[in-house]
Image: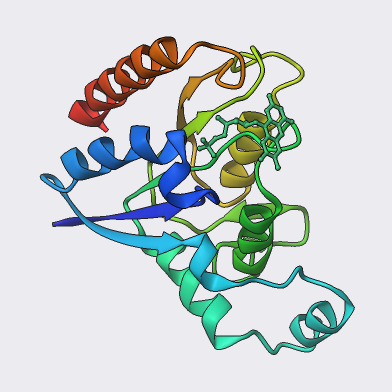
Length: 192
Ligand SMILES: Cc1cc2nc3c(=O)[nH]c(=O)nc-3n(C[C@H](O)[C@H](O)[C@H](O)COP(=O)(O)O)c2cc1C
């Protein structure tokens, strides 16, 4: 069975509307993939700063980071669930990606440029936003960042399942939006 890595970055955990959308979609994907889950909240990550950067430059990479980076490298598909925070993704998820962006694991370089080493063909990004900001608008900086990062790592396919205005819609409308996002994600899951 092919491997799918699910990166759960729903920081509000059981309160998260994004997580409610992602859960049934990931469940459906379990029919076709062996799913491994990384829960960002459980990792208690520190930002990559001077000392870590120096260790890396000297060739020392933490065992944990190497293990996570290899999971990304070897996954056939990746699903990310994360809310829209400060017009992008939560910093903890950005930190996780910085830790996983390792020369010789997720990407490499030759004498001219960088190139990716990851095998996944496709990423599904599931998100909800507080304001009415749609995917592709200049104010939406989560999808462009993630697309660019996965491009660096050699992964070209990218699908965003998003719903917006969740901080302003009435509760019943949010429920409708959650249901329609699940439906959309399940349809993508058929061929993902
Ligand atoms: C720390 C924080 C930062 C946020 N930043 C933004 C933002 O920049 N733009 C926006 O539209 N909504 C923002 N929101 C609102 C969330 O995107 C929105 O409530 C979303 O549905 C939360 O997803 P969740 O229910 O899965 O946690 C923010 C919420 C929090 C808690």
